Image (cartoon, rainbow, N blue to C red; front, side):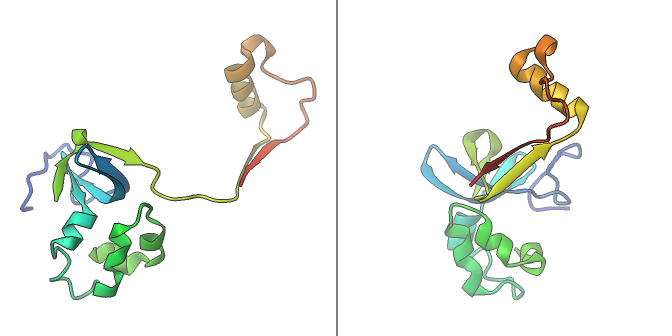
Length: 141
């Protein structure tokens, strides 16, 4: 039982509380949040309002992570902090990229993957390149 009603068929029960970065019409600043049922808990607002004050397992020195525009610093705190860690309707928030990923490399080498990617860009009749033994890769710094 929770202080907040969550429908039994909700994807976001207390057993599945996803973290993300949100903003809304009243506050355009990207900030950490979690989804619970049909609501989003604004962790910056919750933290500022003393929401974590009664948690002896979450250090007050860590509260600044809920004022950052990404989850990188929060992620760096580790699983023990994550487990201890302002409700808004889900429909009223805008999700943002939660982590800044740097130095990303991707590739594909399988024929089926190459065909599917080629069909997206060149159509199914011209999906595979002439040289079918090449591994396709790209880098995004």
